[in-house]
Every structure is written in structure tokens, then in C-alpha cells.
Amino acid sequence: MAAPLAARRSTSCPTVRPRPPMPRYIAHLDMDAFYASVELLRYPELRGRPVVIGGGRRHQPVLREDGQRDVAVLRDYAGRGVITTATYEARAYGLHSGMGLMKAAALAPDAVLLPTDFDEYRRYSRLFKAAVAEVAPQIEDRGIDEIYIDLSEVPGIDEPVGHDAMGGVRAVAQAIKNNVQRATGLSCSIGVTPNKLLSKLCSDLDKPDGLTVVTLADLPHRIWPLPAKRINGIGPKASAKLEALGIRSIGDLAAADPQWLVGHFGISYGTWLHHAAHGRDERAVVTYSEPKSLSRETTFERDLHARLDREQLSRIFTRLCEQVADDLVRKGYLGKTIGLKLRYDNFKTVTRDLTLPEYTCDAALIRQAAGQCLKRVPLERRLRLLGVRVGTLCRRDAVPSPRPRRTAAPTEEPPAAYTLPLF
DNA sequence: TCTGGGGTCCTAGGACCC
DNA sequence: TCTGGGGTCCTAGGACCC
Image (cartoon, chains in turn green, brown, orange):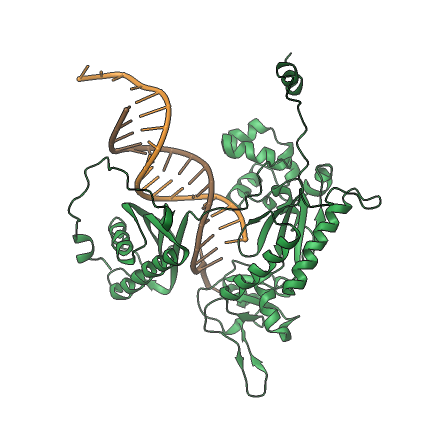
């Protein structure tokens, strides 16, 4: 029988003492109904009413002469927008993010509809992240309204308070919540556990304005009863497949034979499912990362046809290329892989991409490459969405010299691509 | 009343090179 | 001429997340 790993290591390498890994305290912080809460700071008179954020610019609130404000309600909405955020009052009607606004209108015709204002949300995003950093600077950005925080090195984190072994953890998390509230006027929910996977799960357990601390010992009674799809990484497809296999809760998943999971989900995902259900996750809090791609896309108000609506499509196509080029310049990146995305009227999506010999941020070059991609795509059906993506990014000030091409470089560009554009 | 816009990561096949 | 295996790059699609 093989000796335990620690024993073997200590005999074969006596100068290295095996040390138990330092306990980690990882927080996940999620702002409560973020976009909607920011809007309620602007329109406090809407507090208590069901409010959803989404749709275009057309339903901006209008200030009347008598000082009252006219706001749009869902019953007046017509279009293809979806809810990006719903207040808790709106959620009580069954409204939730991702739901089509037309469907939402059927459920709650008198709910208030406000347009999105990303500039404002980004401003509040910077404010809350700065407030967190004053207490705990090890922050991983996970989008506009949530972050992971490594609290392991925060002074006092592992000091019990009274009989509460996790008193230090609770005190630090509360200090973060207080600082966010002070800086923004907004509430957030925090989960603190030994890793990102569990913290993400726990920040959701006591929303809104929650503070949930969970240890591995709490796993069986606090985590295992939850539905498997609450795990970040188990989406609609995996969840449906698990249910078809008789697995609904995280506990069901934890009890499943890992080899059986691998048999059904493959070595990589199957192994991960097993570890996730047992609350195991070693991922670090990553405080810095570079973007991999930038893109712009738009869904048309009505489906367009490549031939019948050629000019309109061409204008939109060119504008998307200009926008993404502008994003590249503004953020200081060049890209090498140009991608095209189409969605047909039947919602089927296709993509094509093309890697250029050199990095670029030039709108005309992007337009030309995306035009090449367009020629490889069927255009019989009407289109509902068009998108342009630039990938394989590189900072403008760190562009590598071009690799010698393996294949013969096309000395003459095939101009047919855009002298005879499809649109 | 169907289903936005911005991303990341993974898989898998084929080309191509050594 | 046939037969390899490994490695990288490119492309397409899909799952998933905020």
C-alpha cells in the first residue's frame, strides 16, 4: 500500500516541511438589482413600484411643467427589447432579466419601463469598486455589478469575535458593505467562503442586502439542498441533462459516482461537476486581465433581407465596423482576427472569421475583412442581427513584428470582395 | 406576443510544419 | 513511396456568464 503523499514527501525531501495550505477567505460581492437601483437614486418617487430597465432610447421619462414626471409603462412598449434588470417589486410579478419586454408587458402592464444608461452604471461601478478597495484591494472584476475579493490578507480577518469563529470575517464583510453604501447609496450582497465557487453561490442566498458566511462544514445542510443549476457553470443545457438523469440538487450531484458523471459529460466537465458539488475550487482571485476581443452587434427593429434591404444593411455594417474600430483606438488595442456574426429570422446564428496578416484598428480594413467573411455565409433568409468582432488583440504599444508567412502572401488583394459588396 | 449586447472558454477538425 | 506523431494556427459552433 502506498504511503500517504505527505509522509512520502517528508521522507524523500526532509528539508521541505509539508505545510497545510493557508485558509483562504474569498468574498463574492453582487450589487442588488444594480441598474434599477441606480435609476431609483435618480427617480426616488418610483420607489416601491415595479420597475424594469431595458429597451431603447424612446421611453425616456419626461419632466412636465407641473414638476411631475411622465414615465413609460410596459403596456405602451412595442419592440424586441428584453429586461436587463427588474426591481424586487417587479420580480414579484414574475419579471426577470432576459425576459422579452412584450412578454413582461403581458404579466405586468403597469410596471414602469426605464431606458438603460450604461454611462451612469459604469460611473457607479467605479464608485463601488473604489469603496471596496479601501477595505480590501485584492479585487477581481466580474463585470459591471459584481466582483470577487480575496480577504485572506485583510488585517483581523481570522480573529474570532466573542464565540463567533467567523466574527472577523463578518466584521470585514460588513465594513465593505458599509463603505459601498456610504459611497453610492446602494446596497449589495456578499458571500464569504473558502473559494470563488461557493462565495458566488452564497452571495445569492440572502439577497438583497445579504451577508452570508459559509464554511466547508456547512456544505451538507446549506449548499447541498440547492438546485444544481445554481452552480455558476451549470447552465440551461447541462441542467436539463442532469435533470433527465435524475439529478436535481447539488447534493444529488455530490452523491453521483464521478466515473458515471465522466461517462455522461466527458472527462473535463464531468470531473469539474464532481468537484463543484463538493465545494472544491482552487481558482485564484485574478486582479488583472487583458481583453481578448471587442465586438459590436445590433438587432434590427424588423428582419432585413440581404438583397431587398441592401443599402440599409450596408450602412449598418459599416457603422458597426466604425464603432468597433473606435473602441479599439479608444482602449489602445489592435486586433488581427476579424469576425462576422449573423442571426437569421429563425434565430439560428452563424459566424465567420478571418485572420489578417497584420494587426489593425482601421475601420476600412475591418469592413473589408468582414465583407470577405460575409461572402462565405448563406443570405437567403432574412436577418435579425448583424455583428462585427475583432479578436487576437494586442496593446497598441506592444505589437509584435509580423511573423514570416508560411503560405505565399497574396501580393495582390482580391478587390472583388468590396467592389461588388453583397451589402 | 418569444428571445439584447458584450464577453470568455472549450471542443473539434483541418492545414501545415518539423 | 509510405508511415508516424507532436505542435501550432485557423476556423466554426456552442455553452455559459453578466
